[in-house]
Image 1 (tube, rainbow, N blue to C red):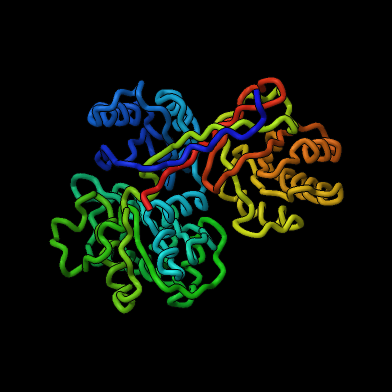
Image 2 (image 1 turned 90 degrees about the horizontal axis):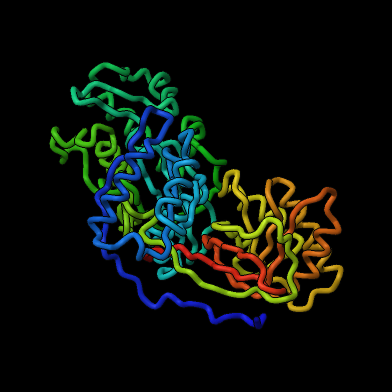
Length: 439
């Protein structure tokens, strides 16, 4: 088989043919997802879409937000992928989820078109995932424990659940909200206003207070000046409504504080209306489509340990968006590895066209240092043709035995996933899977 690159598949068009209803994640208890009900929901959605499961070539199973913290999240995503077929599987950490929401909401596209900095706040049931784009490039991502289902109610209107992550606020502010008791709306309004003010602070429109610092899931952000603000996620559907205009019967219509929180955010951001832009997607922002297969063949000048092949659904981290600084692979890679939790990853580089031995050694040492903080094989994807040399230097420089795969002549983007097949002679078939966003 020729080692030349197979022509890349290009997405010429995309069309949404069916959107399922929005449903809350079914749980067996507060820490366990009900996989049987999840499977039933997906099966019903496929049936209503009138698309045969056997005709679905690829897709994505991505568990996000509060659900990703449940004890069986990884097991559920794996089982669901096996049920559906050859699907991408990921349990998104807060950084990755923030990036996905930023792309899916259209914030990236808005930033690129306007040549300005935009912050997108994707507010779901348990978390707010924040991404900052400047002229189309993602500068920062972070997340906080702010969401519409941090307080829930039963059919009698009594509090059935209070997230442990906001208990300190309720206690410090002396708010009368207790599990098993009915609560006054004014008490709920106090906590929702507090959470809304925290979002003003993370937009750098007010000074960051200690209470807000305690709500961060990921590390804090570097200060910035924002030009535009967009809100997505389930709570994002209610941004624009004010508390005074909501009918009493609708305040808790989802048996949580989501609608009220949205109204309080609208009130807090009233003085910044000129900065607010409407995203293309709100509640479905995180993932609205999935998976384009793009088949390539990595050339014969590659390095790989056959014993661990094939590999499937490996997330790709592209370390540099523009100019590559080879002596900064570790520093930049360490930040981006935080997007994935306990997951084998591949790093992607363009690399020099004809690197010297010294350049190859620098790249190898930076990669080894980066992968010391991960488990699993060292996987490197290059655009330029020097994978065999780099793979050999990495293998010879390791302090202990570890599998190494280094392949070349492959172009990738952040957010892609890679399947690496069994070798065919000296070549390896590779499938690049690209998540598709409506932006």
